[in-house]
Image 1: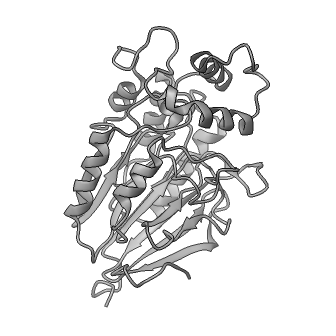
Image 2: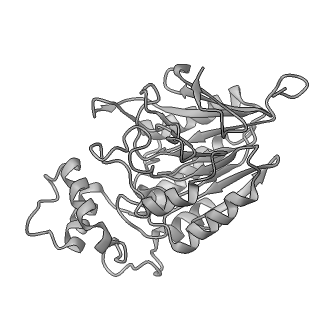
Length: 343
């Protein structure tokens, strides 16, 4: 039991995140994305879909979306459909220093901090302190408000053909749910009460005996690698509310991006702590981050195979063209009494 009659999985798909495509066609990020698609086509000819967990582009610029489409169109023959959600880089356009400057202006901190010298740890601390007052304010420059013609969320939807900030689809009898920010914030995502209620309803549509796959760019605090309070790469404004919506659904699996943490780290997955679904950080196609809190050149993603009684998640190093031995996991179903285990 657990396979089709020929031993193949019932469903296979891939999870990519943080491609950070730039306007420069020869940029390493762009080449990494093309190589990831090439390997998926070669290794998973029966794939049912490629799921992208956000930061499609590096700055949310139109020229970057054009380059994203060029790469996708160049490689799409023999590939399945691509479904995606937004990342913070997609919805907060501009160079990093410009975004930090805007944050300091909106938070009323311009006289106390210099945007050019503020390190990430301090920025994360300030964001935590001021996030409640920022949620209702636009982080967009000038007069480009959340409903204006330059709204980056609308631009993302139009440029990628995504139907809405949050949406779902069914593939082969399995439910795929995509969550996404409804505010153009620099680091965090903000989920409306309507989206959280929608998620609660959608999770109830599935069966407790088979997985439901959920995708969001930012991870919950203190879950996967990079999301601890000290590391600062969590980023859901409604962290408590999202936990409450996910609680009681051990059959779900949450895939996130944002941290870029390499898949070799012991905390690339979070087992749910007995209360929440299993969670996987998807690393990054563009570049990686390490437990030493350092940048690392590289490109990684996840391959997921679904059987009748289990889900197997395998990490792929696209840069090396190798499977990652320390990033292969098996989740048994039904999940209530079946903890996650490395293979």
